[in-house]
Amino acid sequence: MKKVVVEEKATETSAEPDKKKPLSPHTSTMAMIGDAHIHIDYSSPGVRNRIIFGGLLAYDQLWQAGAHMATWIETNKDLIIDGKMLPAGKYGFFTIPSKEEWTIIFNSNWDQHGKDEYEEKDDVLRFKVKPIISDEVTEHLEYQVNKINDNEGAISLSWEKVSIKFNFKVNQ
Image (cartoon, rainbow, N blue to C red):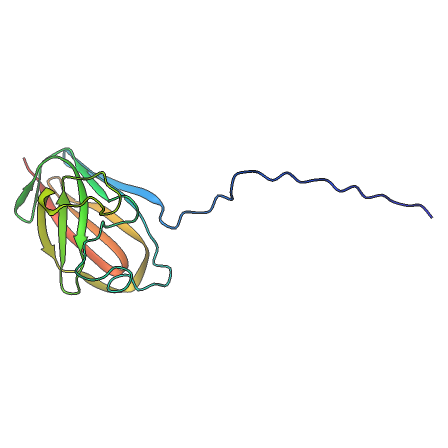
């Protein structure tokens, strides 16, 4: 009888950990509305079977409107939002979610982790919107900039079963 020797090969393991898909991937959205370039940069957390508004995120508390670093919005043109001027620039985008209405905040400190360095005195623009409740779940936080016409657009945020939306005009 012939004897067969099986060689075992050593497998090399890499020092790099497995590349997992991030739970809150970094993303952005942008659009041109007339001459205005609107850019939103954010991290997009998932619902992952959690109650988000009134659960993970307490009502009536400041939220950086994303995960990790504060969400920021940049415009190269002055915008009119809620009848008020938002000068061209880059802003931290914060909200205060509530059941009945949300406070929308554009803050001059756009480069901060979460809301760690948020100060109300740095707010450039604040206004309120009514949330829209849906039966459909938006699994990952999503922003959109939509063109209405050459001079007007809309910004929306959707996550879990809640959406908010506000219109803006490009100041001519």
